[in-house]
Length: 355
Ligand SMILES: [Ca+2]
Ligand SMILES: [Ca+2]
Image: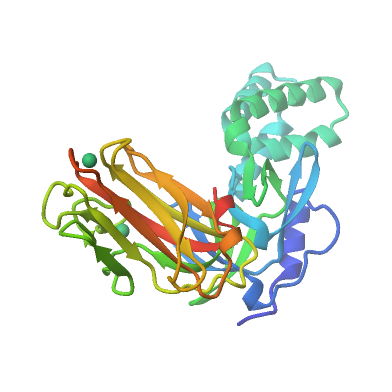
């Protein structure tokens, strides 16, 4: 692991962009505290690694936010100009005071077309300009460009309990990846997705459900099926195997292995489900146990759904090292449909806040 990273380069970058807020960035965190981040670049490529900084600073109209990356789910990076864009904009700005109307007007149009890329040079020029007419032209351009580019200009952050738009105080990010340390210009990045959730169980049922334990009073039972999936190719399904429906008067459950959630502060169960069942008559429940399955408590009952639906259930009251959960399906004596599907299940910390 590389601990020495280019603090100096980051500070310089911020100053050059006119957005440094004072105060040196925090030093790199110990590896254990740094969440995995998926970096999606504008050219479509993706890299996975760890961000070598502890917090992100964002300038907003309401002040400057300093967000620890351990609290950040996602960052969308807005438009940023290249050095060539900046040079072209500065050259055009220099002609805004020209006595030649055509040259002045051409420069004005060029800046208007440059859009967001011209904003920073215009800000610099506005501060330096002394000629009132030039000041006025710059101000007109600034207002028009901000209005036209408001959505793409801003960086956006989604963090625990916070969504904010503004300008990230950086123009370069440093990552530790399996291929070594990488330094990426902010303008090349479309989005950062941080994996900040502590998950103790993730199940997509793509490789069966070997550790899960099924029980049934007949032929209708829970099994891994390819008929439909919420994610990937497989999902857990309750029905008659190899049939388009479940049976009458069925009672079938499938229970997870033991999952230790005793140490989680705010454990949450999250899953996607599709309940193609007779609404109001046939039932789909979720039950939990804190004694490894000796006794069960019902925490959720679902009716029929038309589409895959995400459900989150707080497990605060069921925190235990002996925790288990199970899905239960029950049909009445007539009328049956395709069955219940479950996919993308996870249990962990903070899943209730996931965007
Ligand atoms: Ca799946
Ligand atoms: Ca029924």
